[in-house]
Length: 229
Image (cartoon, rainbow, N blue to C red; front, side, top):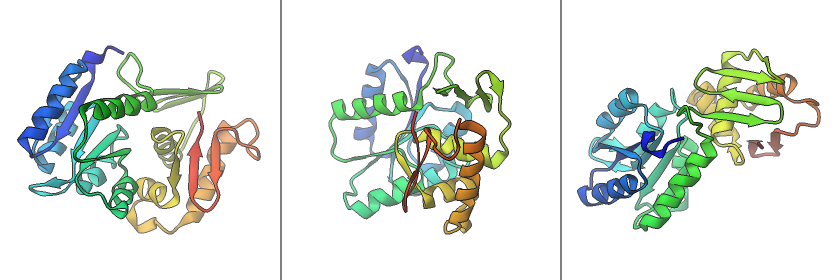
């Protein structure tokens, strides 16, 4: 993919930090889009469809976690959180909400750029500017919502597809039961672990060669699930 076509939404109300991040993004030949509050960020996220969001948590019109909660209802693009909050429970809270990475302020430009590159690699963004994932004989194109196995299209229910897309977004990493339940079924079902067992089973039967010995959709006992590509 041509890097200049990549759009990065920067949500930050501190003008000095905003300027620093904007310069770093421009130096990477990406297109920076600026927002100083949650309302503006959601507007830009909808209209500009950024490839990545860099998000401060302490914003004038609320906590950045509310942006993550709204954004994750319709987008799986990566979110990198920047915050001065250093407590572990704060980091866990924002990652459980659906953020992909967390960088504590103050930070160095080199580390910021490295985190951005890592998140984009993890997304598998293709030359058409849309995430496409290939593992084994399975191909998933998130832009068309098309899933194939050995070039034969696989029909997934809306819930199965949403569950797969969340696991793809975080592929290679464990996604907790609570995070999966929240992102797929909503906050009112965060203790309904049997939903996950049923629908992960459905995905394994449709995608794995041997559902009883999965190679891709792996169980992390007592914690959650991991999609290994």
